[in-house]
Length: 322
Image (cartoon, rainbow, N blue to C red; front, side, top):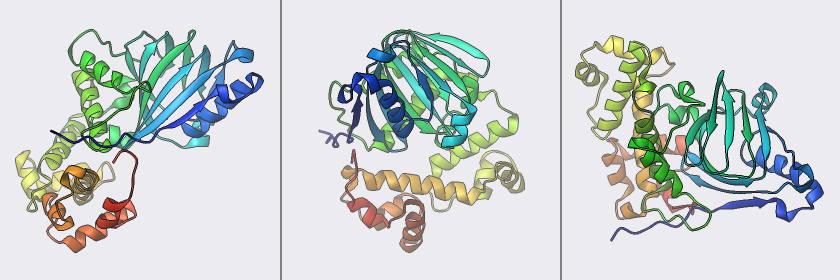
């Protein structure tokens, strides 16, 4: 039987905690401080009610929102104030939404999911009472799964078949009405949503330049073979039929290097193992070896620099959802 990991710690806010005359301003302050810098107005200013439950899933943040009718705007001023470069995947549970972003407009119905770019202006109108879940990802993390996420904003993913229905079902498991017990570390759960999103949107995400497509394939090879300590630029270049020089050029075009990408992927893999109690019997040295690090001391230095703590200290820290 696979052991379950403790439920990620929740953070909750509700307008029921304040005088109804101040409910809307409280809601604006709550959303701006805990979710995203946005402007909010409502036709029910004097009777506005809303609630927010939130918890973290490794690189993602899950927000469960219930609210009366509201008009939400993400403006250039709010973007400049927050400096957050990311996306959120919103699934509507009940009600109806109208979304405008990047010149596209759509209506979101119950069960639909839609991607919204936090780094661009948008207008989101909640038509009456709504209930939704929003899973927020950083831009760099999401691009590992969806190469061109900004191309997909304001394009609803319907739950009526294929991978869209699978994504919808997975998002439906994130709810405030019951506990979420996960058999995997939060970061691994987040990766499932990343992969399901990539499958749901399909080949449209690959409308990139040939060099971008090639770089994405190379990065996939690095992820697949990161545990091999002998992995080199030459072996990866050979696997894709290109020269080592051209491989380095592709990374340089994105202000990256092959080595930095390989180290990042290996550290991500190590972080997942150290966060997973099912691997608690493995020593730090064994985890380092599994993730492609030949020297435990080198692994410890790199891990400390990336996560602010050595692997042993990181493993022993109490963390939400671990």
